[in-house]
Image (cartoon, rainbow, N blue to C red; front, side, top):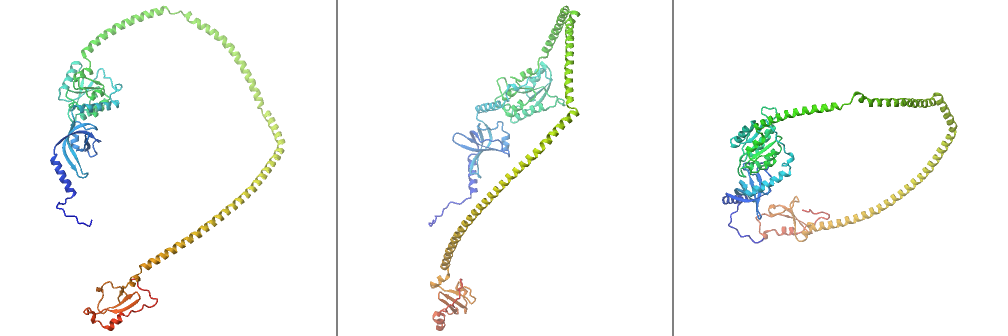
Length: 534
């Protein structure tokens, strides 16, 4: 460290300047990139609406940020573990000395990634029970109002209306939505929830069945019907729901959650209503069959009544058995009455004996007998009571004397223990006092030696002198001495008084010999005077 560091010609810059230069260089070099990787650390939007996660592959990882406006415009939202292709620019974040990609657009990495995401979402929703068959509802046989959720300008609504008009004209309530795009999923879910929220007696009739329809398209075009918000709305619908999204080969997640899946929108209309002409023909046929069945039923019932009338018994036959049962019951009743009278008489006799035993005369006789018995037993009881109390008093006296002796013995033992403890504490106090006195004496001796070693008189003994002015103040420099100033010089063996010379008289030979001799003569310190420590 003693050697001097050679100077450098490199200019010094601050940390902020260095970070800004690095940021500008990275952004100029990577102003537009497309990065393929797997989404990692995705936790959804931050409270501010921005999204922070990372893109990684088998050997590297880069932080990613997506602003709130960009995230709201995404058609496919990122998910944890999803392989995507992100488009944006590389920039740095000086607060962490790290680089990151600011994403402007994100899309799944091919149709395979979309299918993998679709399958994973299907398994997740199926595990929650949204696709269970036991929760699905049956369609009404003849609905009065049909709610249709689709685009109002497409061919789907015209096909549905045309098919309903051909089969069975009913009232159609159209809820217009976008069936493709980034807001289609939210609009379809809101439409399903809105139709379920219509009151039965409101200005708009509540539909008896709902058709969610859309024409065919690619997987990306139909992706809005694979969103969780649409599937959950379809599963929670109280109104039976028919899914008619795409063609017969197109399957979306709403098809699994709907109560019924139709291969096409036209087939959905056919499933919801029957054919009116077929119903009229079937009704007429059923009316004819009902009329013929009624005639046959009346004829059969007439035959049955006639057969039953022939097998009905006469009046004598009907009352013969009840008459015999009545005679037997009258005989049993007579014997039962006699038995009841006898049992009542026996009971009255028992009650009379009990009443006699509870008469006042009998109770007074029993009380007099008990009183005489008590009078005979009273003297003996008093004698036994006095003896018992005397024995108890003797026992208490003996126990009291024994307790007093035990208490005196315990008090003596406690006194001896306290005396021994006091003697032990006195010995410990004497040893502690002696030890403390020795420690204090040793410390005092060491402090005296330290005071002696630090005294200024040791410095004077080595040939130095202490200079003071007339007031006794210490002179520290030659500038403090003026002409004619009376000074006191203190040496190790005494003090001397001198007067400062004229500043012009700088020649030592011009000094008065007598005065110099007087100045050299040491003045002995008066005996008993203590020197000033300063």
